[in-house]
Length: 107
Length: 120
Image (cartoon, rainbow over all chains, first blue to last red; front, side, top):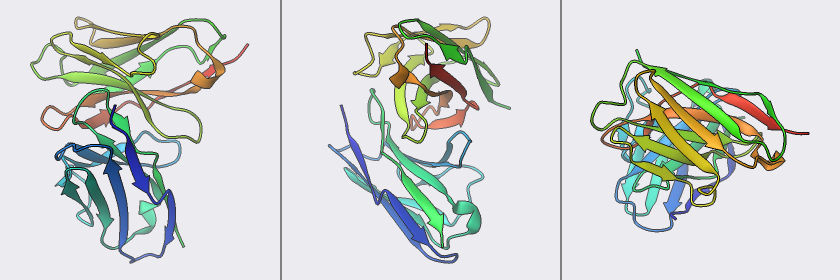
């Protein structure tokens, strides 16, 4: 099975900051990497699919990059509503797997 | 408009079998390429993928849970059913169903989730 490792597990940043979250797979997953945002008490929502494609309706301040085993989610200018937990997920093959999550707080 | 909604018992006893139903609308599991998965999340913990069923009835399971899981579909009722045997308190979680996007295999639409507590 493919293991996904996210870092950091938590971070605190100020409104307007550029924020980066990384995700590493235990093997190459080409570009089969997706990012989700989850707010407390809510279901996750898809932000980025296939490593760098913005899901419809997601603000353009979110972007994704990477291929192979190393990936990055970037928020170009942090907004208060971005306070959430972010998960990466590999869809290269089943069984699928998620990272452990990154909890993002606003200073 | 695509919607998914999970239903099932809120409380089960240890050793019992859990049956959860995902009722969806806005797409059909008879359409080539369509797939639905179940994912769970224990309180305060990360997401864990459980199972997937495809339009052609292919099925895939979590390696660690595959002996306990069965996924099935009822295309006439637009439902996907997950059963999990021998429930344990560590299985206490919110259980989600989600549609899988055809090209990327990302989970593009999620249900609201249903909380299941395992306790005697």
